[in-house]
Picture (spheres, one colour):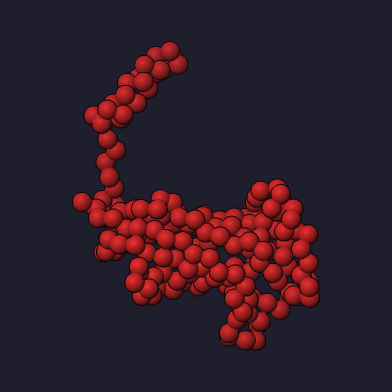
Length: 186
């Protein structure tokens, strides 16, 4: 189909969407559960480029004898309000400085709370191997909202923890949080 023929079809489709005559059918909870089976819900940090001024300033800070320092750690949630049987996206950003010591294990712990402060669940992931060198890293992680999630406000608290290989307790290097709302499917 040539561009000239396709353009009127595109304009008509956009017009129908804008006027409300055409809608996208919402995914069913059964379809969502099937998709969840094939979705990777682990964090995969990748080297990224951040704001050059901020990254430049952070890279000049000294470790002062520490094996690891987290200079920036933040998470954002998209969308801020969601219906059950959908995935939120957690956007993560980390600026890490690493020394030459190799005896540390870095873990990321995410805790999920109700608006009343009740802990719902905790997820722990080993992420140290993803931070091979000092620098800025980013990740996007889907978060499934199950069908039975009650409407309300929720908070995610995320921590980066350093452990030595022979200790079970760790030191919290950085902490961040974000909120989101679950709304009714109706």
